[in-house]
Amino acid sequence: MIEKWKSGRTTFLSILLTFVILLSCSNNSRNTNPALVVEKSGLSAILERGKLIAVTDLGSTSYFIYRGEPMGYQYELLQSFARHLGVELEIHVESDPEISIQKLNAGQYDLVAKSLFVTHDRKDKVAFSDPMMETRQVLVQRKPANWRQMRTWEAVEKELIRSPIDLDGKTIYLQRNTAFYDRLVNLQKEIGIHINVIEVADKDTEDLVAMVARGEIEYTMSNENLAMVSGKYYPDLDVQTPLGLSQNTGWAVRRANDDLLDTLNAWWAEFAKSAHASLLYERYFNNPLGLHAGQLEFHSRKGGRISHYDDVIRKYSKLLEWDWRLLASLIYQESKFSHEVTSHAGAFGIMQMMPATAIELGIDSASTAIEHIAAGVKYLRWLDKQFIEDISDPVERQKFVLAAYNAGIAHVFDARRLAIKNNKNPNIWENNVDYYLRNKSKPEYYLDEVVQYGYCRGEEPYKYVTEILNRYGHYRTAIRN
Image (cartoon, rainbow, N blue to C red; front, side, top):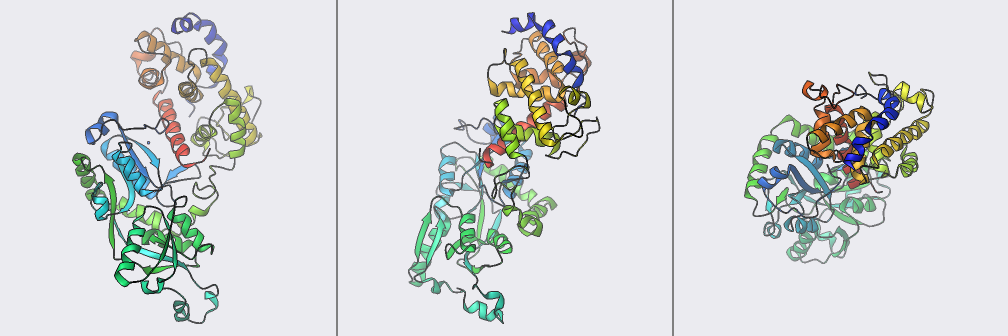
C-alpha cells in the first residue's frame, strides 16, 4: 500500500491542491487506549512508559468536566505530580475505594488519588502518602422543614442530632466499602447503641448527600470537607455533627513501591507549601462561585453535557462515524464552543473556518453555528476519504485527519513522504509521521527534495492532535456516550 500511495501521489495531490491552499499551517493526560494491566510497577516503570496511570473519584470537587474542560482538586494535583515526574497523565474513575485498592494491587493503576482515610485495615493493603488533608467524618442530616421560621437557632438545634447517642435506632445510608461503615460499627460498640446501617452499591457519597437534601433518606455520612461544600449548596442540610476525631487522608500506592512513595512524598512536601496548593484548595472548597458548579447543566456530575451543541454534534458525528465526544473535543480546541470568535489568522465561527475554505463549503460569517458544524463535518469526511485507502484503522486515521484539519493535508502528505524516505511508516502517526511534521519548520526537512509544500510550523498541529486526543480521553472517562 505504501508503494501504491507513492506511485499515485502526483495525481492525488493535484486533486487536493485547492484544499491545500485553503488550509495552511498559519491556521490555528492521552486516555484513548487505557491499559488493562500495568505490567511493571514503580517509579522506573512510570518513567519508562512516560505515563502515570491513576484512579480517582468522579465528583464535583475531585475530577469532572465543566463546559468542556477537565477540572477538579484531585485532577489538578495529579497534573502537578505528573509534570513533576515529566510524564503524561492517564486518569480512570472508580467510586468504590476498596475496588480502587484492589485494582491498584492487581497492577491496573500506579496510584489511588483520592482523599482516602488512613486506617489500620487499609495500611495492611497499601502504602499511604504523607497526610495530604485532615478532616473528620460528619453526619449529614436535614434541618427542620420550618427552620427558617423558627425564632432562635437554639430551637433549630433541638430538632437536630448533636450527640451520637441520639442515633440509636436510626437508619444511616452509606456508600459501600467506605471508612464510614467501620466508624459506625466502632461507635455502636463504644456507646452501646444500635444503628441500622445500609450500604449502597450504586450511589456514592455525593449522591447520598443529595438524597438527604431532597428528603429521600434521613441520614448519611461524609468527610467534613466535602460536607461543607454540600452544605453551602444545600442550605437545608446540616453537617455540623462530628462522628469521629480528625483523621489524615492521603493517596495510596502499592506497598512495594518505595521509590514512587518517596518521590510522591518529596513532591508533596514542597507543593503543599506553595501558593498554588492554597489556591487549589480555595478554588474547589471555599470559592462560592465554584461551589454551585456541580449542579449546573454543563457539569459532568449533573447534566453530563459538554456544550449547548451536544445534540447537533451527536447527529453530525454519525456521518463521520466518530465518537461524538471526539468531535466535541475538536470543536472545543477550535473555539471552546463559541461561534463569535475570530482568530488572528482570520478563521471564524465555531469550527474556525478560514474564509476561502468557508466559501468552498458554502458558508460565511452569517451562517449559524449548526451550519458551520455541518460544513466542518463535511470537510472532515473529505479529509478522512483521502487517507482511508492507506490507513484502514479508523482510530489511527483520526490522528491524520485532525492534523490535516489544522495544518492542511498537503503538509501531512509531505510528512508522510519524509517518513517513507527515512524508512518510517507513513501510515502510523506516533513516532513516525508526527516526528516529520513537527520538524517541518527546520530547513533540513522543509528543503528536502521530497517535500512539495515547504515550511510548516509543525509543532502546532502536533500539539493540536495531542491536546484533542487528551481531552477526548477525559470526555470518555467522565461523560456518558
